[in-house]
Image (cartoon, rainbow, N blue to C red; front, side, top):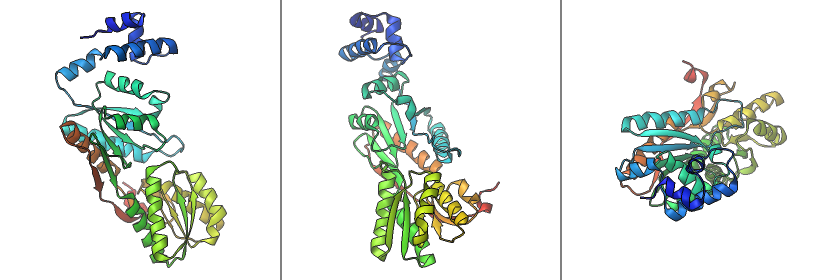
Length: 329
């Protein structure tokens, strides 16, 4: 079996240097990293913790990879629900959980990310908030190095499952209810991020509704930002009958702007977050159980890690009108 001493000799560095590179210590030159990583690859070296786990066929540690929202001052309720749902379900199944954030992998190549995760004895990953631009993570999924579950991204292969609600249908349903309740003929649709999978699917839902009901549709990209939704509302809301927002946070921004403009337009959101109960006006929204979705993702990863093949799983959602009394304790 190849040892860390063999890697150090092959790379022409000290054993302590190899250890620093493998554990991503700062202040190691790029040239040294390259030498060590090439030696690791050429010798097919596995750190002791990984080799031991593989030899004993232990496969009980999973990683949560979370794209934490740092662009809002509001508590990111969705991510917290995801994490709590996963941890609780993992405890039931006897799985160990490590939580990582996308920012921890910035600048890493796919090979570096694999080595880092293996150094933590990770055998399965769940990815939350994957966008089309996350090239390293897409490469990781294509390589099938780890069993994986993606939440809210339509990626499936032999080792990867997708878990989500039907985003297209949910957007269609909540918008249709709001349009029909208010007899609307034109829609201002505030979409999410252009590089997002959920944005693409929700946009497909609103376009299908507009085509079926012969509605005038204006689409603006709100970037899942309360501030940007507010700006769009000031600019475009007067000429439209209803505002359909691809997130509750944007719906809150839109509603607050309408109140300042002193005009009424029905608004609907998407997600069912607690803040909707404090918005000042009741709005239709899609309630998806984030903790339940995350628990289902853990169960799916457990299935994959025990020999299952990747598949697409769709979970239920509800169309609700969130009220203050629904969310207070």
